[in-house]
Image (cartoon, rainbow, N blue to C red; front, side):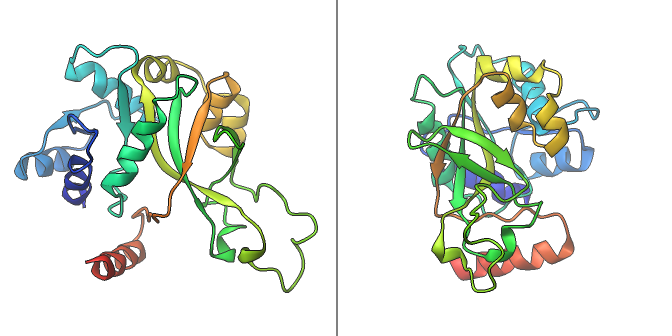
Length: 226
């Protein structure tokens, strides 16, 4: 799975280098076995962002403050090279500190699923808020027996992030914010501290692999796409 994600990211047009940040020896050795580059990080990190920040420091590149680092989850094998390029392009906007993706919800069961993070954003593409709850709340539709997802637009967050180097370094040093602790969503830390997160809508679906059942779902999706 790690190799599949690694090779997909390598195909992105705007990517210069790809590294796997991990605290796990098995993953580290697996990456080396297929010719990838892994960076060993501290096992005490509470978030992927903190892990990425440490890896960037260890890699030792002479990066500029405005250079872009993309955080791709290693357990999402459906990630597409285009998705990586999309978040990198978002960072061309000088007002964007972080870039990420959202996809329109098409399955009604996802609306009330707290594991599906929802996001609302303005016409300029900048996020207002992320939540595990349904947002925005369609007062005149929700609660009706015959409502369906085609009658309104709600977007779920796709967990790929692009950071400017300076922002990543600053963000990793911040303590958890009030809303972050409530929702358990670290992107709220950025919003509460005044950083602007730019969103691009994507048509691509992703599935994080957390259970054996997820593996079956991903394999089915990959077989269809192939």
